[in-house]
Length: 369
Image (spheres, rainbow, N blue to C red):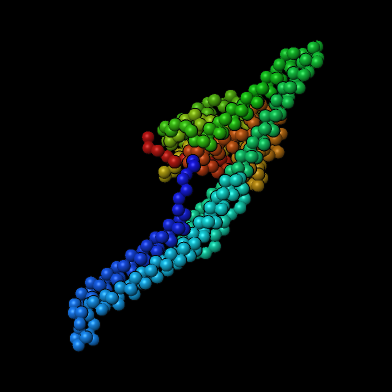
């Protein structure tokens, strides 16, 4: 919004310093007049014509007082201008950094030296904001590039299938349609996941009281056929734990965690027995609701764990399954979980099990029933 030009902060401070100094000088002269000159006798001749009187003192004091006031005013303006410049120098650096950030440069930092004061606190807060902005922008750029790559693949496959159907009329159309439907389904799933991730990042949802134990049971009931098909034992334990948030988003979080635990688990052995397990547990710890999803599986390198919540990041097993398993998802499962937990002011912790598999712990603020 355009603004009318006004006085600079430095000029305002200078006028304030000079005005304060002038007022202080005027008060000092008033004190001299009231408490000194009032006791001098008002006799124009004085004693033998030599004694001081009020008339002589006023004639002598008035010019000196005027010169003193003029000196104080000039001294206040010059000194105030210099002091205001020194005091506002850090603000000038912060303003220059803000302009650079506004032009798109987020890599610079102010690094204000000196002891802690208001300007240093503002500088440190600005540096911290620039660091977070740079990190978020880099993450968004990387996410956009990955999303474009992931969406381009099914679109390219669809175009190839359509070209084959047009150029080869004898090709089995049912097979082409089935493959085309599978590719389009994956593209739609990816698009919906991207929209859900964007929605949770914006925190544009209504909050209500949600029982995580009921959400866990609903997610487990939905995914029980998948677990039985894979020979995975799915168990839900724990008591009622209530938190405040979106029931839809929390159900998606729970579904993603349980589905991830089922898909990346140990397969059933050749005799049809059960080898893998998934345990979902909810409990209240103080003022927090704790959700813990633990699954068996292949050993996970510790250095791989921090990357699991990044969009489109998969380990070797995850990448191999993504090409052969329709339930492996689009590489956004744990990223969506992380975003939903963060939008509900919670924390997400991932830890590899010593014998293989993963333990996911979600802590959310609890609310009374």
